[in-house]
Image (tube, helix red, strand yellow):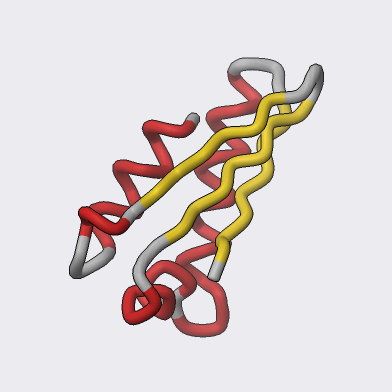
Length: 76
């Protein structure tokens, strides 16, 4: 899951070196935190949150396959 979000985020931003992804695993749920450079935050969120919503949808589909729940949090 972590690698999937990292791959997508690096493709979207101008400074891929600043992308940090951490995964906090629980029994049933994983929380994936995405941190990008301040100037790239808008690119990751997208207009009206569409890009972030799409990333969450992809993450949800991938986590369903693993029978786990995953939550994406974008940190400023």
